[in-house]
Length: 239
Image 1 (cartoon, rainbow, N blue to C red):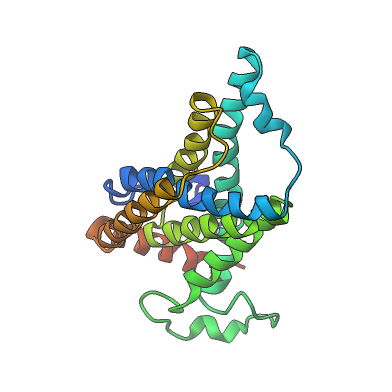
Image 2 (image 1 turned 60 degrees about the vertical axis):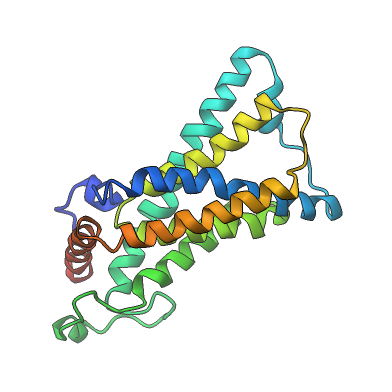
């Protein structure tokens, strides 16, 4: 099923999109960290959560610290994106281009003969982005993190469907985690994000988000979406 003749790269959406999306996605990951962690500080001040041993390892001896940096800053974000915005998205998209993923009814084979709009079902990709964001949030278990992680996951899902590529989301995720690592190591005495930092990060994030919207309406991103749509059409009609 799901276009078995296609490559793993197609399946995971490891494809080029507008190159301007790459630095903008990384910048979004860096700037959005400040307002979201400020929000987390507010939540944790009222509802404390257990200390994370993995985060504590950033203050440990050098070998342990660098292993934690590698896992938190690179391996973890890549693995989560491959799973949540790659492998889990593909079957959902293959279904969503012809039928809502929220429907429990089996797709009618006759529907495959009905011409779809050029972009498939208009809401298909955003439905899938919402589902992937929900799954990503619940994977992290600690409920205090849910509001922050859901915002990040929605941004990652929107970036994934708008760019038709996994790469910008990986860069955003790595930059988000990398900001946490850098401040933990360089400013260990600062446990709370100042409101001014949070406000500045939010303002820059809004500007970067607007630029990303413009960039992802461009020709290269549109071509990437057409490639993905063709893949999803093949997937949804595979026996």
